[in-house]
Length: 226
View 1 (tube, rainbow, N blue to C red):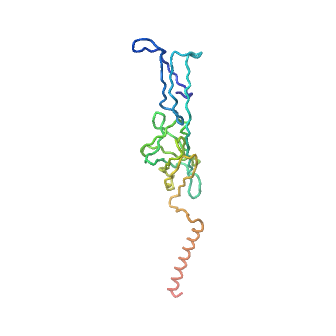
View 2: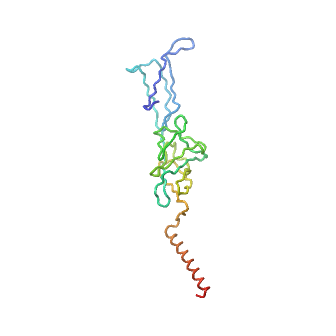
């Protein structure tokens, strides 16, 4: 079909049977590649000749039922400042060790931009391939990336960071479900340990260093007889 959902096809209005007798032409229509997010339409038969419209064409209107699909969104941030990070790249794997690849309706690779990818609007397909062939999803200026078009919201997937912004360490792999939610993925600046104990831990560490230094000075004074 074209962008307006139409398909124009010239068809013979008569057929010849095995005995050579001319009969009405009968056609079976079977949809093989429905649009993303829709179920396959039911088969239908068309017998020609049929009553035509004013323009001489015969119009039929097969219907597709929309599927329930799910999406997932992530926001990439600095683990310390919580500022958003652009340009972080991720691949998505499933429990079978395969990785997600987006293709067009004919199975060909597609080029995607940054941010949230609207699979349904672009009529993409979700396929599972080797890691080397996987699609890389990249965070945009707002730190966002993700996609829609998942068939269910119970399967567990994993987001694997493959392209890390300069000056940062890669985030741990993130397990998720396509449950229409959004969550942050944090990258720690390279060479900086996370302050897991909060400010109190940092102050305690500083005091500890100061006490060690004081003890060393006192020890030297005692050895030197004050």
